[in-house]
Length: 190
Ligand code: GAR
Image (cartoon, rainbow, N blue to C red; front, side, top):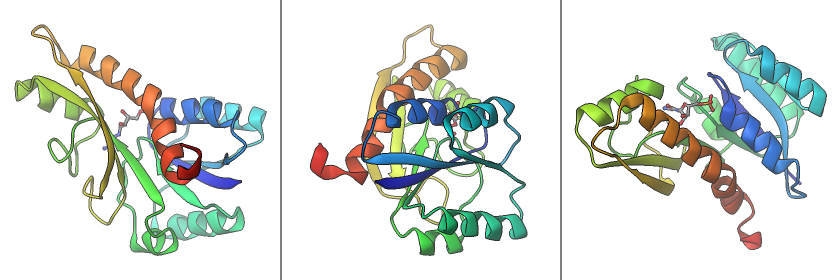
């Protein structure tokens, strides 16, 4: 059984989807959810499911504590699902090529520091793009620059707004993120 940790900073809808999808898996177990912001809903859900939920600030001491917690729980992979902090060297060294991120646009466009959530969709609409999508990629020491694993696209209509695009992108994430991660973690089964 591969143990994963999911790191979040937002609502956590992708984490909830993963908890649900992997609960049926006999190869992947969500062992830890770390949130850099309080999240009552996920905390309660994790308690119900017996998954460790950890919230703390993202400062130097807490980064050390979080890595220790990952080691203690024998975490094999870390999945960033709407996690907005830069991953430090200590994590990249402990999880070499074993951290995966999701980005709500077609990288290398519309990525980098400050490009998250609605900022991304606003920029895509402003640039009059005809399509957008999601990118699932390995994590390295720079925002949104690691090797791309998979991309999925949606068309942008003439009347599209950042809000309607956000709904389409969220649906695409919920449809593809868990499966794309599973294909990387257990390629023999896919
Ligand atoms: C997702 O759309 C994810 O792609 C995005 O944050 C959202 C989190 O939603 N990530 C980034 O923008 C990273 N640059 P969720 O908390 O409901 O899963």
